[in-house]
Length: 112
Length: 114
Image 1 (spheres, one colour):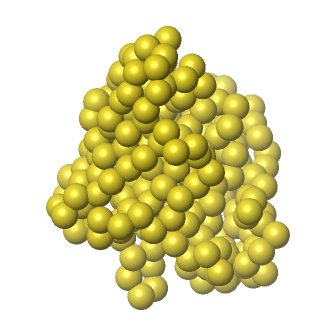
Image 2 (cartoon, one colour; image 1 turned 180 degrees about the vertical axis):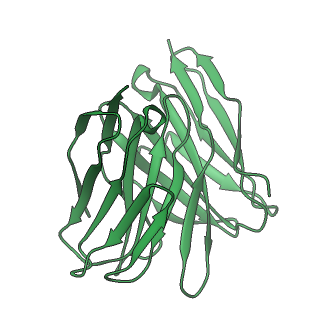
């Protein structure tokens, strides 16, 4: 089946630093979603992307739909302690458009 | 607009028992998906219902079943519980237009099997 490779698996950064993470797949996707999950809670939708090359922001978060349609990137600028959590990417394949596939998550730790 | 709700939030069951989890999607959303989340396996897709019909199914044994009602509310049932079924069970409701497709998660039901 489809696999999404998300990296890095975890990050330890200092407050104020910028963060980058990405997801790649072996096939073409036509939708990318980025989520954040706090411990014991459900993932919260942060950003949705629908077109190759699309760049979308949500506050300090910016995500991009890769031009090849096989990857997506999430950047967080000027991180703060409340950014701590697990970030997931989810993709909808071009040829299986009713089922989302998820990355394994990037665990973000921010030191005050 | 109210978000996705799941009940109960926490559940403790014994091996061999069965359990039913409930999910109410966002108003107007007709698609409901269920996922199992464990530390070792991440988010695993169980099944998706749309207009009371199962549209997609993941690779889980037949002990895991679900259904959707005419008001789009969904239930998931796990029979003959095993220790390995301990997990966070997440429900997600989806809304699709001609150009967008978004999926929103509920808070989850934490199931512990002893």
